[in-house]
Length: 502
Image 1 (cartoon, helix red, strand yellow):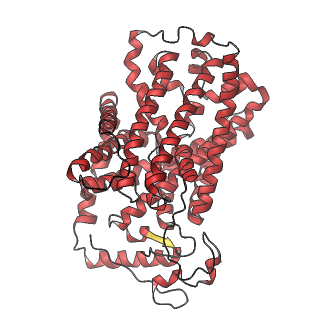
Image 2 (cartoon, rainbow, N blue to C red):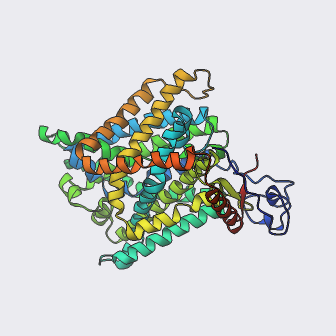
Image 3 (cartoon, rainbow, N blue to C red):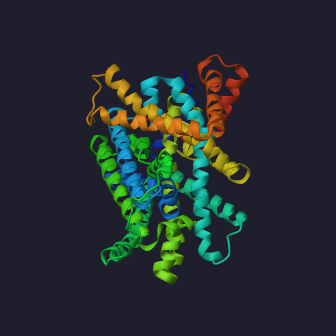
């Protein structure tokens, strides 16, 4: 789609937008050194190896490992089988992560799933993915993580009473606002906070693992006796256990959303992905071993928040700290998630599939401000008015479907573009096994919940007419073009953003 660049006069009368980035007295604020000659307005390569690892670990480890390992135990039927499922899901997720490492080093663009589907299968399929993401998947997902943050940050204050629902929603809205503000202000500070939050959640996991393993080595093994004793009837739930496990590991793909901001992506992306996945697998497995050392399978299934029950049994008064660690963990997931997702909207706008203002950058902060805040109104709307969990049910299968499509795209590109540079290349069996796993989970959703899956499918299909109305038809009515230019220009002035300089 041809782009129309809207020129906006500089607030001080300078006629060219590109001069926004030059010799501005306000440039002493922000992410760079004041006085750099003719500095470009662009996204900087601020993501080092440590920051890349913190984005992946910090986004994968949310509230799940602290609250609900019981879903896997319930569906796997025994302690031993649940541990096997945790390890197997970690290995399958590593396969997906390695596939994305190849995609990220051969297609050096930000945007993650969207970019890879665009490269392999064209703009129509990529837009349907983008549409589903924008109107439902991302706002609902962000609202769910934020709700967990709101609930757990207030729990120590209201103990031993329950937290009022309106207080949870207000705390959630404040949490979302803080994350949006931080991501709008500074890439460096967002990355630094992500490192701190990642270390804090690893500390929380260590507080669970160390005493648990200490008791195990002292001989507390009664809960592991007959660990693999399972009824054949229980094995029917094994696919559902895998489904839960794959969700617990979801998030390994977020570094690929910010590839253009990664220092030396050929080395950093594969290394960050591999290190992160190994750390997460070890943490998840040992945390579950610690849980089973202290709690029987029956106690774990009866608990609403496993980490809190664990802390109450083992640490007494110290257990009040666990909800705070869970809240910090959720905040880290929100922060990493928004940092990554905003880059997908930025790239989609650059490709002409979203309004042009979303591919613009703040003149001093060098952050993609419009792409960061675009989800803010719809997330708050869903938080206060929508049924978040229904939306997530509608959309959960689509997430795996499109990840599967992106990995199939890797296989497709191997044959259609064999000469493409691939600094990091995985054996073809890895993407084949992983894409089969994704499509199996989609089939499982269709089988186990055809109504919600059907509604989600219908919502995503509205992206097809939207593509033809907004993207494909190039000759728009004059009034529409005027209105579009006026909105773009107004937002550009209000937000102080300009197109990136290349």
